[in-house]
Length: 327
Image (cartoon, rainbow, N blue to C red; front, side, top):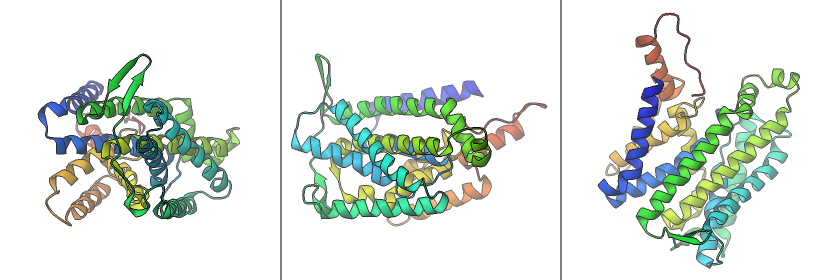
């Protein structure tokens, strides 16, 4: 089965990389959005699926990265784009650190989720009243950047070039998140999610690990927003709306929140459904709701859990141990 996973991953990566050669511009644009939303979903699931903390206002960090990048590119300040992406991620991490220091000291669970939702709405209202950020109209006509690598300059101003840049960044950021989730730090986060009291009894600084996870999640979410601004070439306050915050949640629940690849699969499924129902005005949400309901009822662990259940039932050999939950 490991070989099949590798082949499926290679086939998926090949399809995304070669997409500009066989798909139209509309499909390519949706594919770029899907890659960005995958990073956003993985960042959110680092907090929920691995640490056991829920955030209902994570779109705020996404909006921070998007607006910072969009504003700087429109102002033509001259900051190298890679440095701007890093600065956006750091800005999201700093805001997450401040938020986490205040909230995680006193609250977790549903209270933390509601507080993050409230803070995100405050940020969205602030953006809506900010003249510098375009108020409700947002920042439009955001130019696509030029990539400066030492003495080499790479033009990524065209749609195809920037799409391939998104592919590379999705691979790099996804790889970093995979290392974080599957390393010693990720294993401690899983133990905190499963039993925080026992983990604290073993001498682990539970609050420190939760805060670090919150900071990393906010930073990666802001980085995803930074990639989004030049791709969409417009950023509006709706980027930080609570509806946008539900997208990584639904993707994680659909794909499987306790699996690293769950949010990836969930985001891809949502993207395909949105594309297939693009002409059915008002029915896209209904279809997504029905699919999510069926998956949750059939397999509470999402599509990944359903696949593992089918594999254990029909393909496992006697005496084999069940697959883990963090693959």
